[in-house]
Image 1 (cartoon, rainbow, N blue to C red):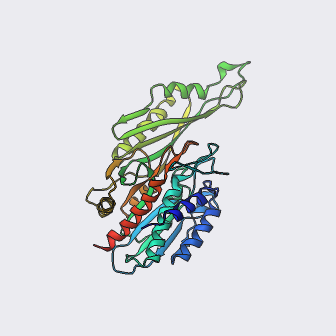
Image 2 (cartoon, rainbow, N blue to C red):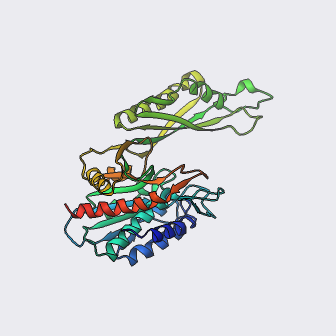
Image 3 (cartoon, rainbow, N blue to C red):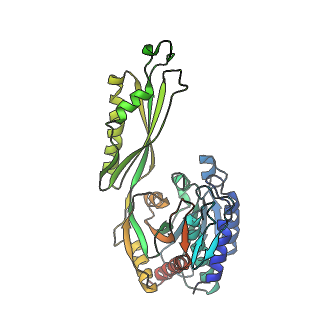
Length: 372
């Protein structure tokens, strides 16, 4: 039923619009216009101001034509770099960039699927319940857009985030929570050539403590990673400070809290043997979620996929998405695959078929809810 030519044209149009994290203004203005033309009441929240960006999250409400549960469809507007000057190439059923940039299927594939769903509902006067469309900002740098969403705007019964790899029919029902951890180590500066013994090298202290700190896979659902170290000022100065940046993840909240505390304790207790002052600061990014396979969102997505003949696969994820926050906000949300492959690289590509099947799946989900 979907208009494949229109879907492809709009996808190629959107990926050519630069949409860097914190600078989504151009694409947001275009999407606001299109959502409004399709009959939506569009509101933009103040998330952009909170996170230092120029654009807020877009929340659009569409009244239903029949009484049915309210469905939320979501995707994010921003892309990783380099996303300026994208030149898409379509060849033999594959869409990719010219190799100098990313493609931007993450997540313009989700955006286009939602827009085509809205058009089909309007053009063909298809019966449907109330809809909420949420296009978020700043997903790529830690889902900070949805983290700062004005939750008073949400009223959906359940939702679907169109934003993961693999073929349509695949969906993620379980994902970890994540914490950011900053360890600050303060030693003592001294001239490295004149009186090095008078100093306490914070970088050396960090190295000593890192050698036996928690790292990597802890168990089947818990990981942690030391991702960045920043320290010192010059080679002729005994390094006075060093910052160590960690992340911890787990699909189990208790395990997430436990590994986070273990990392903090390991470094803070190391103050005694290193002679440094050491502090640990934890910044939660998002919480974990687990949807029952009997949840309405999952059952609806499965039923719609089966109607379309799409192979169904329920998967666990090791990464987070906007759905982590939506689930925390009380809107049970499952993540749907839209066909993006090798995302976040210049080798990113999509199959045309997946682009069209994503739109078909989103439309069939809305129709399935209305038929209950």
